[in-house]
Amino acid sequence: MQPIDNELPSHFADRLGTLYTSLVNQEHKKENGQFFTPLEIAKLMGSFTEFQHSSVRILDPGCGTAILTCALVEYLTVNSKLQLIELVVYETDNALIPLSKKSIAYLKNWLKSKKIDFRYSLLTKDFILENAKYLSENGNLFSEKVEPFDIIISNPPYFKLPIDDKRAIAAKDVVNGHPNIYAIFMAVSAKLLKLNGELIFITPRSYASGSYFKLFREFFFKIIEIDNVHLFVSRKDTFNRDKVLQETVIIKGKRKEKANPNHSVVISSSQGLRDIHTPETKTIKQKILIDLASNEKILYLPTNDFEESILNIFKKWDGNLNKYHIQISTGPVVAFRNKQYIHEDFQNGTVFLAPLFWLHNVKQMILEWPISKPDKGQYVRIENESKTILIPNKNYVFLRRFSSKDDKNRLIAAPYFCNVIKSEYIGIENKVNYIYRPKGQLDRNEVIGLCALLNSALFNSYFRIFNGNVNVSATELRDIALPPLATIKEIGNNIILSNNFSIENTNRVVIEQFELTANLYE
Ligand SMILES: C[S@@+](CC[C@H](N)C(=O)[O-])C[C@H]1O[C@@H](n2cnc3c(N)ncnc32)[C@H](O)[C@@H]1O
Image (cartoon, rainbow, N blue to C red; front, top):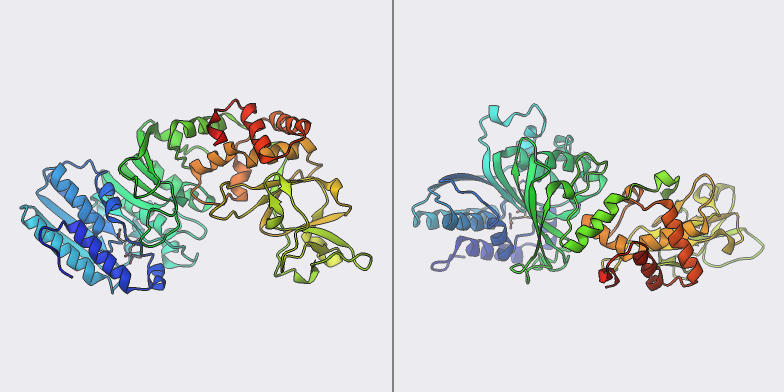
């Protein structure tokens, strides 16, 4: 494949990428975390730079066909007085490297015609293994030969690394659990920047919350001052060429000794590619987005005034489950391991059976049981050996641990009252979480109040502000801010008095309780 006359380097890189994508199979792409950036997104990312000097050092780790470098350089040639570019790129896929070379060679020629000097090195080594040493406090970049960079632009690979992967071990100071490789790319890059150097990354949004990324957030946002965030709200639209179902985010920030919490951040958002040039924008202080003194250090990304007002409501609440002596746990019945105790049908007399609740029994504000489904027996046998997987029959809130991508709500919670079933124990399958008061009992109004809150549009909107995932974990729920317990009970009482447990009514009660705007009815 050859460049067309007067073709822009980024367009040529895009064609090379499309060609490569058509040649390799899905498996190969997955293994290498290989999803190329669409041209329009590469251009948007390039346009985030504010760099103005005449010589620049750029790094593009995991460069693919170097589309990001090309788009950035094209932007710089128009918007700065560039005379010299030093570029370092990393790429590990041997089959792709000839195309990386081809693209960069064309960029060099194109720059020559503009009388801009261009030097580059294409390193075919693992970016993390080469540079992870700079992550540790003693890894002093400035004492080594590596010269730090003015701009680092990247669409890093994304896949989870096993705990014992060399790269995960090398990055243990900044990531824990099963880290995703993209976060290590971001962390290492933050260290390779000059002071005031710029970092422009496109990644999944999952680093914004969750315990696996907590260390990362602490490390990264201490030294990176955010200038821009662009959020792609639709999971389906962004990388449509490669069918990646991820909520994606671009972040652009500058390396600082210590990020200024009062720095203004511009958050823009589009559904996907089609409306990328007409984004909704909002300016907000960094300290509203992330509070490094907080326990979870969540990165909130409100995209409009309405979402900011929701964030403010939650920030005013200082209650949580723990404070109210309430706990959340995961259902202990693991279907494939406990098969021998699970029954499809009720058998009277010969054995003692407890109800077994599965994910499909849990609906918004209602527990539907029994619902017969193949391999999802609705009963579990009570005997000495099975007692360890059963829980006492008390009042609970049941929550689905997994929602499907098409679910409008992230949280689906149903009330359970012990008096509806005559049994000493009940069984809860592993894909369901349950909320309970270990010492004592949840009152009826607490169960209904909590259920109504968790299912409400208010909580759903709040989760969307910090969680790009479709699921909300028990850890996140343990930490979530709640209104005073008296308010939760009041919501419960109002619903019980109305005797209308439909989701429309419970949502209305929540909205009225907090005097929220009609936006939440949508
Ligand atoms: C998500 S793709 C993005 C490619 C390109 N930057 C773009 O925006 O289209 C990530 C690239 O990183 C490469 N890669 C994967 N692991 C790497 C590693 N450890 N070091 C360097 N490159 C890596 C992959 O082969 C892939 O080409």
